[in-house]
Amino acid sequence: MFVCVCVGSAQTQPGSPARAPEAAAKLNTSGWIWSVPGDWICRQEVDCSGKAWPGTSIRFSSTVASDSNGRKSKDNGRRIVDHVDGVTPIYGYIRGPYAQGCRITKVGGGDVLIEQWEYGTDVWEEHWLKGNGQSFRVNLESPENAVQIFSNDFTIFAITISDCSLASYALDAGGPGSKLSK
Image 1: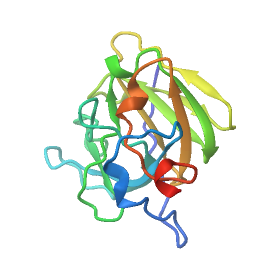
Image 2: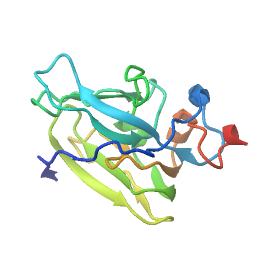
Image 3: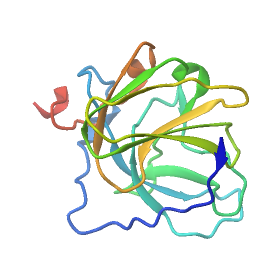
Image 4: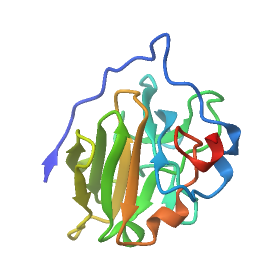
């Protein structure tokens, strides 16, 4: 475990990824799960005044995930919202029991960052998937109880999730190769 005090500096550039179709509210049935563009914005409950952090995240059902990281530190108290409308929550912070034991495999697009941590704290573990076919098995050790699958450089990526039921809670973003884009 380590404490990361770094703040991403990625900025939205012209030609940024297009928004996934609004059909994103449908459960994923394609196998490939695509990330969606989002902004990590300050939560109103904490004294945070920093700029939004652009990135992409896997969107899950609110049944298994939260839009907030629960952190109370000045600039890390964030929640994820849709990049286009700036309001719609993206539920990307997965509650541990749903992610425990899952194998996450990168199958397309940009690099994937998987973080494991204790919800609400500023201490986390980072696991990068950079090449297609690379995988990581979630193994939360106390006090870790949360997982996030995202990119902090605003690139769309695709994953598969196996060995657990978490994939059935992913919302289909309609990316290339998904059932929604055919």
